[in-house]
Image (cartoon, rainbow, N blue to C red):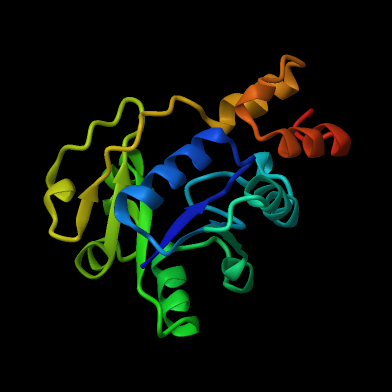
Length: 191
């Protein structure tokens, strides 16, 4: 089974990597694919750097990990990126593969707002990792397709990282070294 880790990855940070690696081992996954979303329907595009920049940063972050891969599959789908459509596209593109979706507990609590969220819940294996302030409780967490991961609670956010870079107090240790060097060289997130 392949774990699909959807995200803006704006930028990818150590929290993403720690959670993905934990779930990879915990669930005995074949691989984890970091699916870079060009435009999340719940986020504004104003703070997003170019999707190819974000894909490049993911590739820098995972370069030395053989069981992590990146995916730009959503780049060929209409924007904004709806998980329901992306899951269908993955199943069509890789009919011989089985997939589990990695999602934070905050995202699962927002499932009623998703396009065909109930259908995803009924038909897709979902691995939920903890997010600060969002305990894994409520009606969606008891679905038979849900697995609650014991991944560590990581209090790192890309929003906080972008804000620190803009304020010239970059939290560089929250990023893989190659990602920070790319951000610094390309002068990303400064305005």
